[in-house]
Each structure stands twice: as structure tokens, then as C-alpha cells.
Image (cartoon, rainbow over all chains, first blue to last red; front, side, top):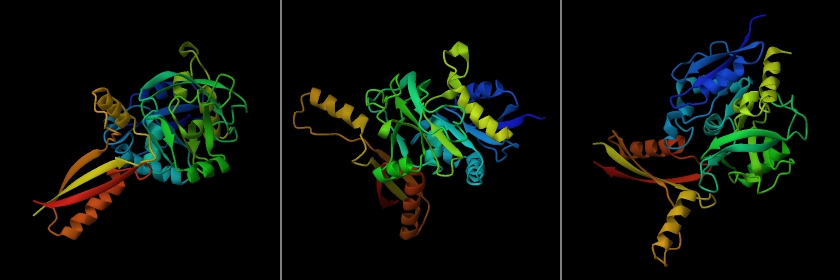
Length: 234
Length: 83
């Protein structure tokens, strides 16, 4: 059976595109295909990943200009049809700017660019992105961002909670959601959310950097496994 | 004659402005005891080649909403100057 294609979008300034390509290529049955920002062709991809980095130099606001690139018009259409789209870090920022996800990401609470290992917990394991995790799993996955402080008005947060759209939260090593475990000031320790339909996920931590033993953690792999099982119909 | 739209984008009061806080602390450290707060925003000048003021105003509004500000966390205002 031919490999299922997974599109990895490359914006000028993306810098996790090849890490993501490498991580995707390490799974059986799928093959990464790179999608240049200036194109309109999704090249038959069954899922799209928006990688981390500094698309368009983070000018104006992180993700704000990438959102209007030619490829994003296709990605938005693809997502609206119900196909899976995953945004990691800057990719999450692009998804928020494009309106596929609700809320915004502002500067980290403590003014610092944070590049470190964090603990997160999948708080909804019944999604196409997380069904290979178990409730109660505490994951060790790195973050690397200056603007990851998730904000949304209270009514939006309530609605996200109510519809189980919060997928990952920052926790301590025991999986407790505490203020000390919140690296960037995100409301309700939110590390990742999805849309109501459940086909678009954005998260600040980098699962592609936790997908190989040599990198110190394999905790990102079940996220990709969940998604790739879904698109391969396994 | 074109117009220049002088657009200001500011963070909403409810959003923590970490850059503003850093500047506020620096000003206090410089001895300006009466400085109470500082907030940082963006100033953007856009030249719009429209003859009609209302049309230029419509465009300035539209681009501010669509791209220049993020309504989830920012407000915008602008003035139009006839060149």
C-alpha cells in the first residue's frame, strides 16, 4: 500500500519544518511532503502540519502574515472540510490568527523566551490527535517560544472547557495543574486546544522534538501515531 | 490626492503588557517617581491612494481589523491625513 502523505508547510522563517519532516518520516505508512507557502497545491496530503519557527520574521504579530499566504487559503479550506490540521508552536499561532482556533497568544508572563523541557498532560484522550495516550499520562515535551501565553475571554475559556476542546495542559511532574507549572502565564495552564469539530489542534510544546530516544523523550510520538492511524484508517 | 492613515494599535487593558512593565520599571529606576505605568503599542503609517475620504476611511478600518490588529487582544484607532 502506498504511503499516506502528510503535508508540512514551509513559510519563510519556519525553522522546525525539517525536524517535523524527519519525525514524520520515522513512522511507517506515512511520508512527509513539503508545501511551500507560495503554492496553492496540497499535493494530495491527508493531514497538514504547520511547523514551528518565525514565519515572516514574526513581523506585526506571530502568525499574522503567514495566515494570508497562498497555501494557508488551501489549508483553511482543507480544515473546514474536516481534514486534520496540526499546528505546533508558530503553527499554533498561525491557526489562531487564521480563526481556525479561538483565542490568541501573547508574550510570556515573565518576559523571557523559554526554551526548556516541560510537563504536559493530555486532558482529552478521545481525539484523533491523542487517542494513543492514556488519561493521567504526564509527558515531557520541550517548549521554545517567546509568545506562548494563551489568552481568550472568559466565555471562550468556559466554552472550550465545556466542549472538551482543551487538549493539553501544563502540569508539574505528578500531572497536577499548578500555577508554578505554568511556564508562560497561559490561562488555565492551556498548552493546546482544538476546534469544536476536533480536526484542528494547536499546541505550543514541540512533539517533533520528543520523538527520538536520542533527544531524551519519546513522549511526542503517540500524538503523531494517533494522527497517522486516523489518516491511514488503521 | 492620497491619504496617510496613521494607525495606532494598543494592547487591551486586560492583557498583561510585559514590554510596558519592563519600561515602567526602568523609568522608576531612573528616579521618575511620578511615573505610574507604561504601555507599549504599535504605530503604523499606511499611504492609501484614494481621492475620497470615506473610501480611505473604509480601507483603513478594514485593514486594521483584518491584519494590523488582533481583536482578541488589541484595539486600534487611526487618523487620516490628506497628503
